[in-house]
Length: 369
Ligand SMILES: Cc1cc2nc3c(=O)[nH]c(=O)nc-3n(C[C@H](O)[C@H](O)[C@H](O)COP(=O)(O)O)c2cc1C
Image (cartoon, rainbow, N blue to C red; front, side, top):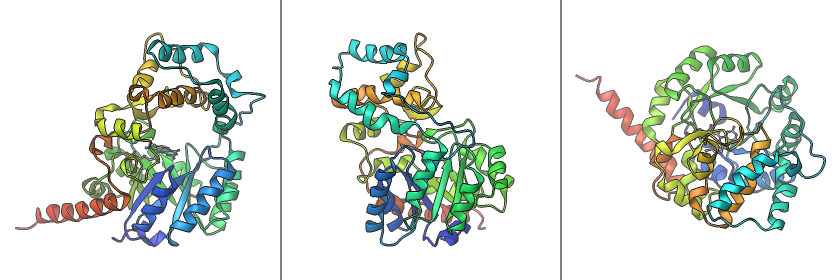
């Protein structure tokens, strides 16, 4: 296939894959697409390990990283344990419901491990992201994507100055215009069907709006895309490729544990709901007793970023340890209803391209006499 973005990155198919899992990133790039590693909330040391691994396994194919830059990002520092900055009402609410539902408490050592080794990494700021960028730019990355807001000018210029493309994810045409004024090379227009943090406008409406608003800057359509018919629709809407996330969760390469895989396979499109309970921002994730708890009339108002994510860590680990699938959740978009059995990254890429070709043949035939 040939689009502005296959040309820009010298790839075979305009299929961009976001994943927190290095195996998925390397496998997508090797299959002819473009893998992008979600690096936000990693430590610089962790990111270094992941990128070194990708370099060893990606057969010199291009890949990128995604991190959080935001003009208004605030630095959150913890004087001692992050648990001390959380309101006791919130800790008691969610943990109390789990106890009432028969889920054993976590051993103290595991609670301490969560707060001391992981939770403090959830405090994000542009300074933290720049340290991650320092690491990423030591590797042969071809794209840096910023999610959640405008990256500082010096960051965009630094990345582009090294010959690396800079992309921005947005959920509205207004934000797309601002990103283009800031000088980004490509836009990811993410519709409301997507997994993770979402806005309100659907991919079908958002994509052409953004394409028209930022032309000739290329646009990747995101949200609800996992098969060839959806890729054909995205390209028909004017996108130069697709940016996908949820579909890779169902591959054997993904990061999900066996319990979460069962939850994923059992979920229908309607189970991918929007919750504030996960991170404090609207996030599309799998419905469970955890997400339903935060929608109860007696629930305290979810905390802001990053505090709600810090709060969520303990209940997530508790559900995992007890194998309580009814309490497990994970970011996933409405495409989840089409993920019904295990597959591989290579198979997903193959199926997408082959269904895209069938779709183009079928729709082109509509024009014939
Ligand atoms: C499990 C999961 C985690 C995600 N985490 C992030 C993230 O950290 N940063 C980001 O920019 N996008 C994140 N996203 C959104 C993806 O980049 C992508 O826009 C989205 O998955 C596209 O919609 P789809 O899920 O329908 O394919 C996440 C998506 C999923 C499914």
